[in-house]
Amino acid sequence: MKTPGTINAFRPNRLTDVFKSAIKALIFLVFFGCASFSYSQKNISINSPHELTPVRGYYKLLESLSPDPKTSGNELDKIIFPFDQAFADKVLGQKPVYLQNITLGDFKIPAPPANSSAQTRAELDYLLALQHTRTPEDIRSSLYMSNVFDTPGDIGRSLGLWTGEQKLPLTDSLMDKVERDGDYFLWSLKFKYNRARPYMLDPKIRDLEESRASSFPSGHVTYAYIRAYIYEEIVPEFTDFFEAQAIAMSHARQIIGVHYPSDCEGSRVFARQFVNMLLQNQRFNHDLEKVKKEWAAKADESFGKLSKKVVYSKN
Image (tube, rainbow, N blue to C red; front, top):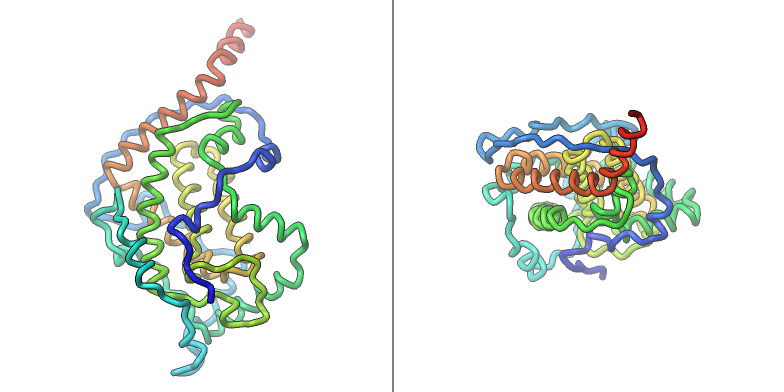
């Protein structure tokens, strides 16, 4: 039986030098403006301040199918991921830092489709098609992406925001708090649905990673989108880059057969609502402003002298 792992199961290790050297971008002289936020946790609108972009591509096609059980009492619908009460008590014992007044009911996340539904069957067929066509390179890159991630210092360098290794203690502190909040609600959703992993419904699915938790929503994809949506607040001109990384993580989790497409789409919906709630939290915004200044200072360290040379040469 595949059992749950640790609280950090969805947080890959630090990006390695090999992967960093593969990410190259032009160097930009970036100057950051500082905006002031004064949101509170009252009168929360989950669509404010940022709307979720509409579902598209094959996600949209799959969502057009019925998510309902084919027949009442279908044996397939009785299959769930094993629930571990001691593990649940452990992970849910860590309460949120920012979203202390938020409950799981404040999130409006569509439930995953029933095991016996037409939508789930189509999703399993899609995973089987990916399994049939995945190449050794697809497997290598998908497993690699699932086990490493780029830190704020790494990603700033890859975007050309600074030129060397950087330590960002304020950013690291912010993201640690965000992940504590994210863990609480993410695990709450997982325990609420206990969705069976794809291999549990179709034995032809050969997943390439041990599943340590229930399927919905995907932890890896949730955090990929959470990071993307927060980084967008710091350097919005790179929104396309951040979201492309999250989309790539979503596809990687499907390539290796551990998540249904609806797990990944549910993660995107949850992450957008989660970050929207953070952006309406006064304490979070206070910390975020410090992070923006930290990034601006690091950019100035890297390019301050260069910009002065450019101005001097023009004169």
